[in-house]
Structures are given as structure tokens and as C-alpha cells.
Image (cartoon, rainbow, N blue to C red; front, side, top):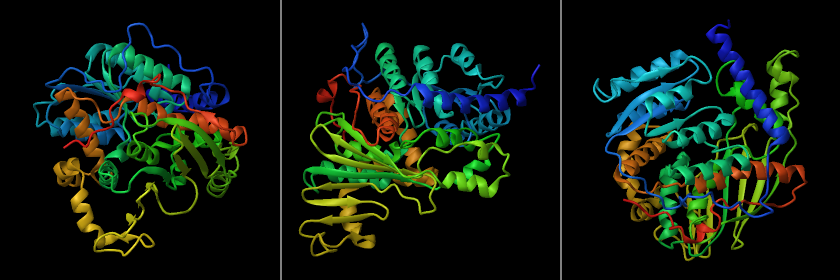
Length: 468
């Protein structure tokens, strides 16, 4: 009989192998035959509001690098009860249980059940505890199957990025959400960043006119994660870098600009994508420099280009450049640029250029207003949600407070019976960039058509409101 640690080690290796299998034969890129029919009895979830929950009974699958932060902060939010935690590593589950109990002051989270026996314990957890909401914070290949099963067991689901790895998975998530009447939200935390909320409000107020073009990126050098060989993010994500030549992580940059443009919400939607990757050099060089020749990383044939650049064209003809690079030695950036007929808002660093100049800062659009010169403008356009939660968010932490605002809004919407800020279709559209870019790269940049996960209903979906 295998020891628990052997079982977990084998599971990590199996997850890596499954990721390779997905790349080899399952990715479906474009929706050439049109969207499939909605299942009988299913309903469109674009503006869906679930019945109010006075207390949200929450369970977590995965409390490692990201999951432990989710568990701690959700446990602190009023109106929650943590009922179960599942992780392959008992020490992580025990740590999160202790933290949640402390956040509940011995009252709200007094009966947390732990599930750590094997890779199927999460299924038993869903059956025995019947939570209202489930957080899925596991390796990418597990996101879709866990989300689908949790919805079928009666829970709303909140999934770390990406929502799924293939368009087949994304369609099944959409169909399951529509059939069960359960939310399935991909937790794109960057949509809750201060700058991103600010720019959303500025765009809604018409400050830069008609929106024409956006640029988004996730530039984050993460080669150090390859040191996590047996346990941790690098133990499974490295296989994706090796076997997938695509934009593997588009949503941090794409999510905010897609909401600026109202993509999938009444005004416009995703149309086509073309994609190219640079040569794949950095990961192989890192492995060669830091590990012996017989190490498993030096046995991989790294195929994923160090930099991927994808261009999206929307139904209205607007354009979005999306870049991804987690390998090259350069500073972190999400880029975050939105360009309109009257000006441009940009990030990293935060800058504004307006036709006629920014009052009190610049004479015209030929120079950027930035730093302290933007304080008056930002005070006028600060997003109401950040005005309400910003100070608390900075205290609570999590990527500058964006993580807390996201978690708070999830619980708030569930308790008030309001639509979520991100619907299941947005998570599917943003995640679809990966399989689409993979096919485009393999076809020397051939255009790929986005599936319409809404089946045309996006035209009737309300734009995201500027909630207070």
C-alpha cells in the first residue's frame, strides 16, 4: 500500500502528464459550425441573480499558494461559514483550518471538515457537506472537472484562472451552469485593482470618447518556480510551458480591457484572433544552468515560446493586443492600455493623455500626465466601489487589495441576490484565448474564430454597472 506522500507525489506527476495529453489531442480552437443548441430546460446566465443566501456556506478545494489566501479572507468576511477544506497535503489543510477558526473567533467556523485522504476526496467533500459555494484553487487541468461536478452537486463555483484549458471544457462549464442555475465565475482578481476600476469608470463616463483599441499583457518572470519540483506550482506548470506553444495566461491583462469595451455585454463581442510566439529559449537555458543533465527538466523539449503576442479583432472591428511572457528577464507589467477617440489611459506606470490636455497637468495629448499631477483627475473618477472598500482592502492585502475586493464582492452578491461582476461567459471568452492562440501559432498565425459561448445572447446582456 502506498504511503500518503507517495500517493500525492504520484498525483502531481499524473497532473503533469494529463496536461501533456490535453495539448496533444484535445484542444479545439474555433467554432466553425456555429454554437451548439442550448440544453433543454437550461437558462441564459448573463444577468443571472441567484436566490439570496443569508449565510454562505463555503468549501475550498486546494489551500496552497493561492488557496490559503482565499480561505483566510473569505473566513473574515461577514456572512460566511467555512464548512470544509480539501487538499492533498494535510499540513496545508490543517493550517488553513486553524486560520479560518481564528477568523471566526471560535463561532462562525467551528465545524470545518477536512478531506485529505486521496485525489478523490473532494468528491466526498461535496457529497457530505453540500456547500453553497466552492472555491477551486488547484492545478489548471483540474479546474473544469471540479467546477462542473461542484455545480452538479448544487454549489456556486469560483475558479482560479483559467476557467478551463480547452474550448470543449469551456462549453461543458457553460452548459452545466445554464442547466443547474449555478454561478461559475473565474476569479479574475485584476478587474478589482484600483487602476482598473478607475479606468472602467473613466471609460463609462466617456472621458476618452469611443473606445477603439486596447493593449494588455502578463509579463512576469517566474522561472524560479522550476525549483518546485515535487510540490508547488512549478511541479505541474512547468509541463505546460514545455508542451504548449500559446498564450498560456491571458486573463489578467485581457479581463479589465474586455470590460472597458463591454465585450460580451451588449455593445460588442470577441470575433477572431491571430497569434505568434517567439522562439522557446529561456526555460531550457534555465534548466541547463541550474540542474544536472539527467534532471527531469532537462529531459523536456520546451516548445512554448518565451513571448506570445496575440491580436484580437472584435465584431465591431476594434483591436486588442494581448502579450504573455513568464520567462524573460524583464520587469513585471500588465500593460493595461485603452485608447479612444479623445485620449488614452495606460498602466505600468499609470498615465493619461487627453486631447486638449489633462487640466492642471499637460497642455495637449503629446505628453503623458502621471504621478501627482493625476490626483485631481483621479479624485473625480475614483470608482465608487474603491471609495467604499479601498481603505479596508489595503489593510486586508492581497495584490494591493484587489484580492479582498473580489472576495468581498462575491460574498456580497450571493448574500444580496445580485448578479456577479463577472459571468460564466466572460470567464469562458477570456480563457478561450489559450486554445485559440495555440491553434493559430501552430498554423503560422492563421485566424481563429471565438466560439460564441452566449449563443447570441450577449447582445441582450447589460454592461457591467458602476456599482457603489
